[in-house]
Length: 91
Image 1: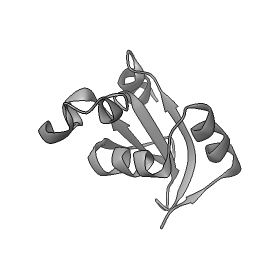
Image 2: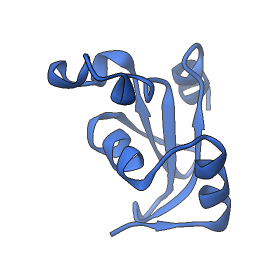
Image 3: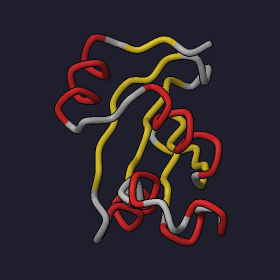
């Protein structure tokens, strides 16, 4: 079970991301330990073959879920399909 900060709830609503979609990013996305947080970033190549024909899952490419260091609280979520991974690696 994960918790959402108020900020994360607002951002998820703004970006039209459900809890199920955030869990999907956490399950299949690449995991980074940066800036005192856990960052899950979903690239197109991270989406399993069986989900690639589903546009609902493909739209999640470029989505990042930022969690507290303990891995239980979502701090924020954002999307950047073009340079999102570059930003994460720069931090």
